[in-house]
Amino acid sequence: MSTAVDDTPVTRRLQSVKKIILVLAGKGGVGKSSVSTQLALNLYASSPTARVGILDVDLTGPSIPRMFGVDGPQYAVHQSTDGWVPVYADAEAGEQRLAVMSVGFLLKKKGDSVVWRGPKKNAMIRQFLSDVRWGELDYLVIDTPPGRDFGRAPVADGTYGGSAVEIECGDSDYATGGCVDGRNEMSVVYPRRGVACSRPD
Image (cartoon, rainbow, N blue to C red; front, top):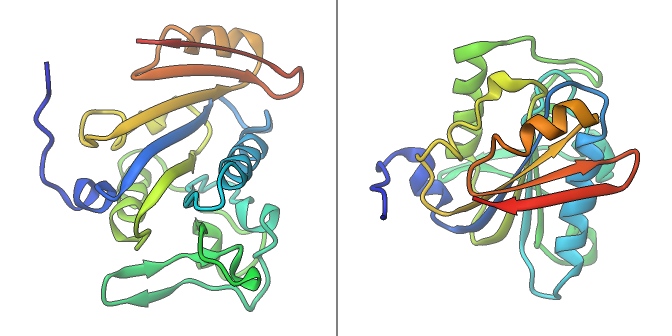
């Protein structure tokens, strides 16, 4: 049975995204950002026309700009009439198929973090989802903050009407719990051991 999707700034913005991949972890330091990076790069390389975005909303330690080599002072997002314009990691190759947006671009100094929690943190994540001008994307990979309080909102809570996949990263205890906790399709990845399992709803 189809479910009505609310008309919100987030859903309107994400209408141009074919598939969203949430990368989650119950705690920090388990390889979540590395998985997000490798996933985005492999999807980008899968086709000469693939358009991929990666959104780094790991507010406590945004590392995606460094992993994509776009953390220098010459890389910055700017406002347009249609929202924030992401940094394109492949711009030097003359393309705009690999878009990067991170809270790290908005911090004054490298190594800074945002120590917001709960509703204030989720409100900022919603703003990133609604205000970034992604354009047409085949895939949007979202590197989420560690912990359960992210709540998958607003992508996997029903406010996004497209196709979403969740990937859990972590130790065996947490990941096994995640295997029975997912929406849409769930994959569990053990970055340190290279083991993965998946199941549909």
